[in-house]
Length: 293
Image (cartoon, rainbow, N blue to C red; front, side):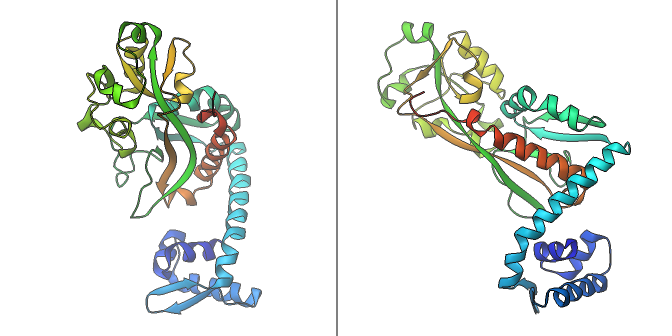
């Protein structure tokens, strides 16, 4: 099944062989053996490479479940045998806060021998230089030997303090927003398109206070210095913040897990990826604002 998945993902015997650290002859033999055992053709061979047949496409989901189960067993054995070491996970600041508050204690218990390095994203990392083993991104990565998998959606809205709202003209519609002081990102330092959202709120908004850090923006808002766009799961931790135009302005973004395909071949990394995916998805409701909350 490992050989089947490698060929299904790469479409070429040579690339699958490199991923499996073996020869293309061995890969070909394993595929032939699997097809003979199942008595069905899984791939169509043509000059462009190997393309899945209908039977092959039906087998993908089952094979991936088997791969995930094997990864969990192997990773657990690896932890018991003392294999661990450093693992670097890059993540946006907001996600990092959510992970630390909700999943980090369980992570330490599950993987006691892994030295977790959490690197908050403030710039675009070079995936080609492998600056992180696993990256949580706001946009999917397309192209190259990388794969992005959707984790969960989250909600962002406008927030300000009672003190700010009382001292400034009322905000009744979106068209009232450009007349207010906004807190936002430094445009040229926005490292992901998903963070460029003020124009989505209103095209005439120009932030007067700017920071590359969402927590600096949060602090400025808590001091009553302006209106800010914040993730729902972060803003609700602060009683001083009030929703602004809650029924009109609601943005939606997605967290993606991105890594090199070679990382997904490693048992330890696969187990950590499964842990993050399952843990965040189990708490997906915490990331989104419920209607008329």
